[in-house]
Image (tube, rainbow, N blue to C red; front, side, top):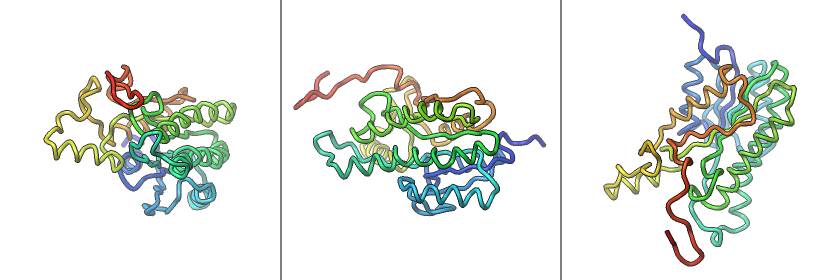
Length: 252
């Protein structure tokens, strides 16, 4: 029997209770990894992904129980909805940035030294096509994901010589708890066939498709991929949006 692509590796996945995180945990386990899944509901371990102390405790506990750490997937995040820039207040901005950007930064800070001790490994952070250009989320969410993309670049540079690779995944429209309202609304209106129609594949994505991208970045197959944002969106971001928001009105 051939070994799995992550055989013998110890991995942490945040946001593992559903969607992309759960699909990735299932896939990585099937590939031989020991996976510690964490989220607010305590899939394996309860964690507040935006709290430095909570994230540090998760990493330290994993290292103590399993002897080390090889892979971290900082996947947990919040959307904040689609409110406009005049609708989101300071508290909304602070919470979205805390979970989506500060949390991954703290995860990298505390995971990288342990991964280095194992001779190197992989850190992956979930960004979004919203971090590439406008039109795929609210202002705070978009800003947080743009920050994630730059976070992995600076982290890769600051970890020079450590053997720790740091990359991001930028999913497009994927059916998860975060996007369920979009899918439910389309189905209620009889417009399910229009989901994902703006990308060249003309469909939404599945969590398992992102999980396979994460498996690639976690594995030795991506041994020379570092400081990169891998876009998995059916081609959505290959073009500019069809409409733009003009102050006070929408124009083509």
